[in-house]
Image (cartoon, rainbow, N blue to C red; front, side, top):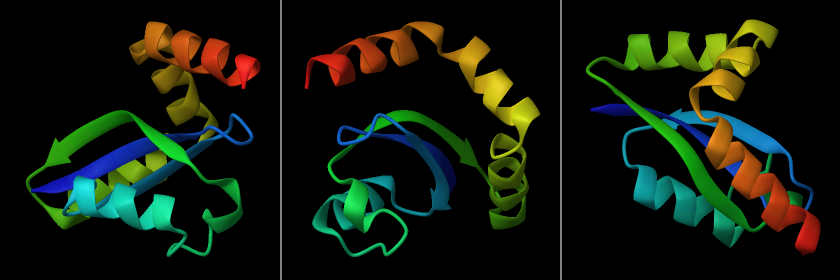
Length: 92
């Protein structure tokens, strides 16, 4: 299975969207600083994950979630999760 995920940075409060096969290992890579795109924004928490049977479907979904329409979808799909994340970020 392939996973499309959204992480929240506890450092700057911004979201990061990606895809992988093993979400636990990938989250560990992000938090260990092994991903150049997110190295300076650690630590991260997992906010959202979708499973897809094919890599192609997961990559297409990742591309969509990175668009304005995709960000709007996430805002509507997980409003309480984002609200809780943003409230915790403001306290840090």
